[in-house]
Every structure is written in C-alpha cells, then in structure tokens.
Length: 150
Image (tube, rainbow, N blue to C red; front, side, top):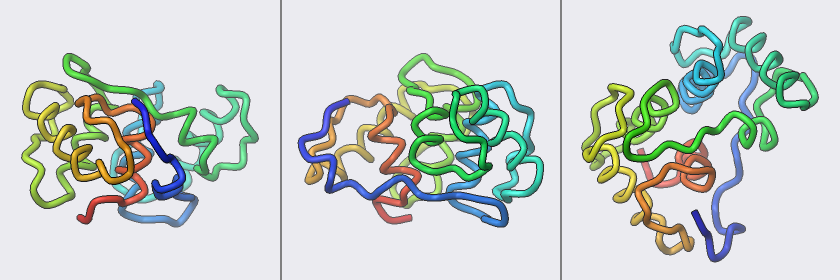
C-alpha cells in the first residue's frame, strides 16, 4: 500500500499495561495471530503484557511489554480477500467500532470486509492512502490510531 505523505497519518499509538478498550483488542487479536492464546477482552493485563514481551523477543525487539511503533510494525499482519484468522478479526473489529462500515466480525475476509476496508481507505484519501481493499501496515496504522471517527 502506498502513501503520498506518510507524515499526515496519525502515529502508531503507545499501548501498555493498564490500558483498556481501543486498541487493546487489536493488540490481542494480532498476538493471537502470532500463536498466543489470549482472551480478547480489550484489557491490557499481565497475560497480554507477557505475550507482548514474548512477541518482542521473537521479533528481536527490546522486551519492555509496551506496544510502540516497532512492536506494532512487527505484529501487524497484512490481510486481504481470502485471508482468515485472528488478524482478520482484529481488522473487522476495528471497522465494526466505527459508524458506517458494514462488516461482520467472523475472521473471514470476504467481499463484505473488502468493501468496508475500501470505504475506510476512501475516507483517508486526503492522506494519500491507496484504496486497494488490503489491510496492510498503513491501513492498520490508521485503524489503531483512531483515524476516521468511531
């Protein structure tokens, strides 16, 4: 996915122990995609922190338990039409929390999810986001940072 001016996008959020709600559930879904077995409860407790530390070690990052830009970039999984799994659920949940995006959180990236991703990307066209229906790093960054109102 290309961006004309990446500086216009909101930065990756910092998510750490004690955080609740958005975007904690996305962190949990993405960690589960990488083999962890977290309950997706949108609460960043000790189990989520331990999974973050483990993932950071797996990716050769400082294992501080804080999800910052480098950790986000390591755990984000590009999903597209035909993808299935926890990362798809995370993307769907991100879209579902916003008004106007018709999506079902079922872990299957089908036509409905692709339309919702395209609609989300279209709302970001002023930032140079390519409308391709693929939730890659730029789209994930916009979703988890809260761009396009909930």
